[in-house]
Length: 144
Image (cartoon, rainbow, N blue to C red):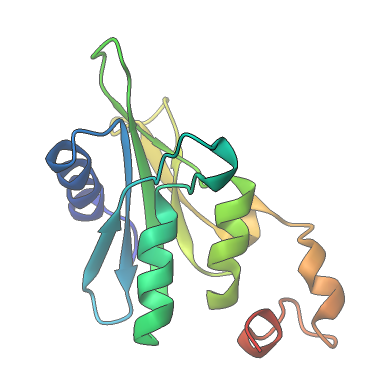
């Protein structure tokens, strides 16, 4: 499934339910949605991005992630933005392949966001070196 307003709304609902300023939601291959929030800690090195919980849950379930969105609320209450996953979360999504779709900021659009694949976000992905001639490493290389 492609990122759509339903996925963004699920992330926003999770963010508001937990009184946070950011959250994420992923679509699984069967159309179900997993949501999560960031884990903040006094020790900043122990913090985890908002996408991490949903990604780990999908992996635990043996489910395939097809799409992901990250939402952030501005502290001045000027709205909510969909932002591309950080580099670490791009790595966390990589085992599901280069065609995982993610929301990215696109202020020129009516919605303020657009959809891109991991391949589009990172056309020079370093992991391709380990792909045995393939354009993207197989899941077994990411998670032996």
